[in-house]
Amino acid sequence: MTLPLAHIGHYLWVFYLLPVIFVIAGILKTTLSEKRRKEEDSDDD
Amino acid sequence: MSFLPFAHALVARQDLPVPAWLFAWGASIVLIVSFFALSVAWRKPRFEEARWRPLGAGFARGLVSLPMQVLCGLVGVFLLGVAIYSGLRGTEAPDRNFALTFLYVTAWLGFPFFSALLGDVFRPFNPWRAVGRVAGTGFRAIAGQRPAHLSYPEKLGRWPAAIGLIAVVWLEVVYGSSGGVAVGLDPHAAATAALVYSGYTLAMMALFGTEVWCARGEVFSVYFGMFSQLGCFGVEDGRLGYRRPLAAAAHWATLPGSAAVVIASIATTSFDGAQEGAFKDAIESTFNWFADRGVDLTTSLRLTDTIFMLLCFAGIGLVYLLGVRGMRTIRGAPSLATLRIGFAHTLIPIALAYLVAHYFSLFVFQEQAQFTYLLSDPLGTAHTDLFGTASGGIDFRLISATTIWYVQVGALVVGHVLGLTLAHDRALVYWPNYREASRSQYWMLAVMVAFTCFGLYLLSVSNG
Image (cartoon, rainbow over all chains, first blue to last red; front, side):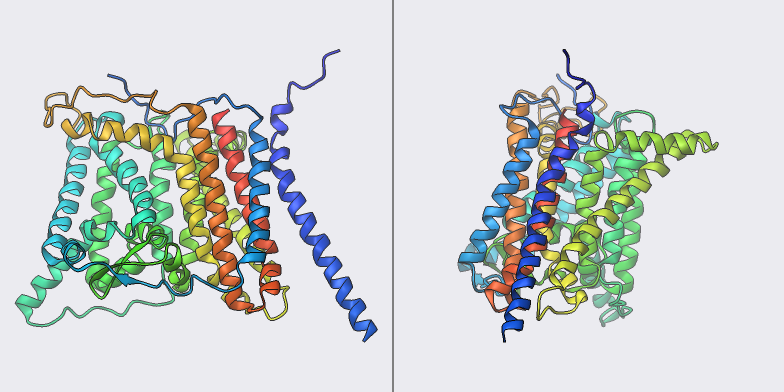
């Protein structure tokens, strides 16, 4: 069976977008966890 | 003799060991590692002071002496004159006429490259500055007083240069490529534009003063001067000296409109790279939309290209503003306006990286033409052979497509790592606590990764 990959070239831009998405996701995750930790610290005080 | 089709950048399919998109992943990893290395090891700002030191007396003084300035000015005026004369009187074949290669390759691409390495090498050769200075000196000698100039509206800052920069590139890649042939601007139009620009520049210099206009509105002085801030040589108080590389850039963007200049540089290069590649389908659709509504074909094409060039400017500006906006979320952040101005210089290495990546091959190949047959036969009439090199040609085997690709990737990675370094250094000024400074740069990291991947995507589509 042949995979329907004739038009895959049109979607190669997704591979270039993925690193940007990973970095933004990492930033959001880090920012949120830092915010949560700060809130927990202020609650403890 | 081989002829070069005067395209904006030479493209060819490379023979790569892995898919091109993997290079974007690799470059992103390099940026992330650099970011963490900076966070750990770079805890105090180092670029706020350029640490300029004068160079040894004799040679350095000779380089900036008045006779040398006069000589360089004369060379600049002579070369501009040759370019204009060749454009007006020479052949209409763009690849055979001295004017286009000299104006749009040797000068437009050469000065940024060399300025970034050495400092402001354009300033002594600037033909309009040379004429302006001579006119000012003549006026003082005759009238016995300094010319009375208008005070420059400081709010305008470098905006005239930013708009002029877009106009210069627009002339070549939009106006020039809209004639239905893939040869770019015709030499006559380029020479006419150079004449019009000369008149405009000299008039502005008469109004506001030569040095004031060169620092703010003269497109080429501002544009090449921007790259020279990365270089390690600079002139202070009429003396040539050595300074810390990149450090002069730290205080370049204080004038309004500076960010627009550097964003315009990245945007116009991006548009030129995307015009025949990544944006091709969208440009065709928009062109058809205009053509279907009765707009004539040339106008439709120019209108479409203009819209996409402006969209590139808006898009690059927006990504930068998002990065800056992200910094505002960090405690103790200065105002948005301060951040917007304060980090604009971090885009200069990226603008240079985009230039190298997109035009390196064009520069290497076309300079062979410049220094062989175009120099010997500037008009391209085949009747002159001034230096005996009129029968020379271009050796396209000088660099392979694969080598070009690695230079492009290398330029983009190095440019963005330098941008990150400048941004981290500036963050340490606003947030003396290095942990907060590093945290503030999360979003600039995203901006740098986005610009790197976008640049590599444009190149991969153009090359594919």
